[in-house]
Structure formats: C-alpha cells, structure tokens
Length: 148
Image 1 (tube, rainbow, N blue to C red):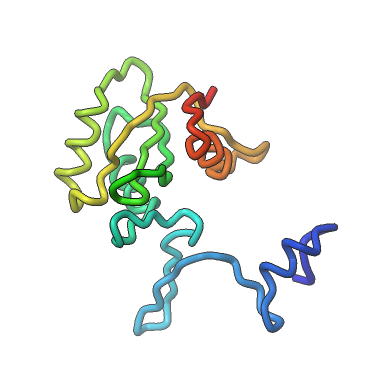
Image 2 (cartoon, one colour):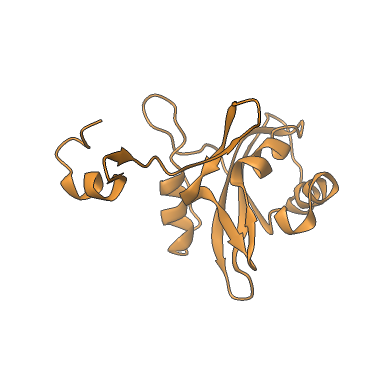
C-alpha cells in the first residue's frame, strides 16, 4: 500500500518506516499461526484492565435473544472507560438490560461484562455491511444515546 487516497495525513499516521500499521491486535502461536483478536482502537481500558470488545461480542452472540451486537467503550468517572453493549434483538425477544449483564457475568470475568446495555433497531453499517463502530463511539462519547 502506498497510502490512503488523497489523505496524506492518514497515510503518515499509518505508515512508519515503510511498514503499514493496521491497528490490529494479534497473537502469534508457536506453530506460526496468527490470530487477529481486536483492533487497537476497539480495545477498552477499564481501571487498568484491557477488555477486548470482540471477546465480549463473541459471548453476547451466543445469547439466543441477540441478533446483532457491538461493544464499545464509554467514559466512566471511576474506571476511565467501561464496556457498553449495543444490541439488536431477535424478533419477539424482550430480555432486560439486567438479564443481559447477568448473562455476561456468568460467562466471563465480571470486569469484562458490559456496565450498560442499549437496545436498538439497527446498527450503523457501510454499504457493504461492515459495522461502523466509529459512529457508535462518536454518538456515545458525545453523550448522545440515539442510534437510529
């Protein structure tokens, strides 16, 4: 990659010493396989603990009432950031915020569980269907909770 189209500022931020830095966080295994775990900008740092948004999403996707989910960091006075789950429910499903949080706490470390859950009709996506977490972060970091 030579750079972002007509965006030298973004290109300079991403290319260092000739290498393109994707922002992906990965684990390399002894057998040589690499597993992409998350994006650096999607990592939630809560009270000094790192929380992978994709790990929390993976647990939530196992819940039978959840159709789609995005987990992002939101500001918190005590912890700096805490996880927020933004959920599109299956048709006819009506779980409560408390039920979803309890489900997470039963299936992962308590500090990783979302502190808040927002139920929405749809998540913002690109024309190709890719989730636009940056739009969710913009809305919730500015204090606006309206997704649709």
